[in-house]
Length: 389
Image (cartoon, rainbow, N blue to C red; front, top):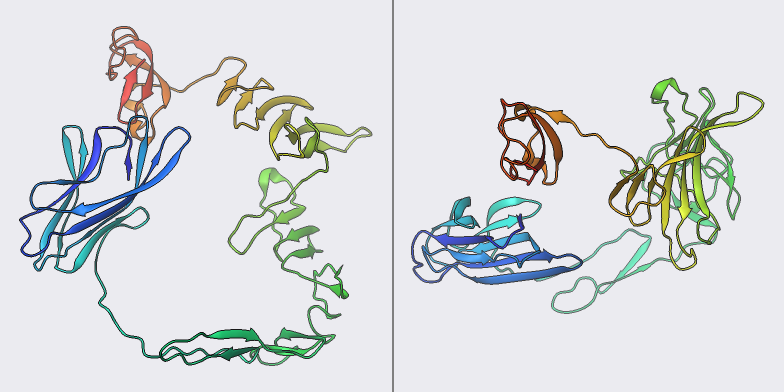
């Protein structure tokens, strides 16, 4: 929940005065200004039908991100709790919930609105701990005060923790190496053996060769051809544990304007190799004190056409952008009729052209466009609607 102007706040109230104890609230939020992130909180009590400010308006040029609102009904009776969003003279109800005595109403940034009961106190009389045979436990059980200590049990030399080499599945134990173990000589199809400190090993899940289709798999035993543009996939990198597949390119170069890594697209079908396009990362500044780099994009051979600078600026047709988007040349924007304009509430700052406005850019400056006319005007979104500029 975001409060992005000094006119916005959040208030809460109950339908009637408390019988014994006023409900209480606590909130957490973060203020984000130009270059500062400031976490903060507030708390207090709801005093009846008069709305109480639970999250105040942010300061000018500051966005207040509301993380959590927690209202606890301490009274002896049920109350209807109303939470309202205030925007200047306008009031919007965010939640109106019947909360029994001893229960709470909670808003969380990730969970939305919830109602629940506060758990009562309990007593723990004993805490014990059991571990597999590979560990030893001391101090168990603890019945009044004490410490549970876990240590690794000693094991015989040259053993490793594994299940059986064949037969039914059983719990793993520490045992001696066997030639039938996956890390021994019993390699499986697609294995690419590699040397470790103790001998030859394999890991199909990380390094796999599909000899039928001629593909190398990194992080997958099923390197796949996705059929992009009719091209044949030779290398498939994946992360099947839920993260991202990544290929890292790095360089020992630390001087300014030196190449850190590149991906080159070209042809070797003639006597002279031909470069069609490329993406390259270039060191920006002294690499001994920072890891700052920019990405350069080349097309039509080795002609640089686009760059993303170390500052995050994008340049098209220029090698040194100085603003978020720096274009050396004309740019185009979609032309709409007023009726076909996309939603302005997707985000503020959108820019487009309208071809059927009834007002001109001069007579309609700052006003919402209306269709049915013949004027060609630029419009922008303020986050709530389209305005003529």
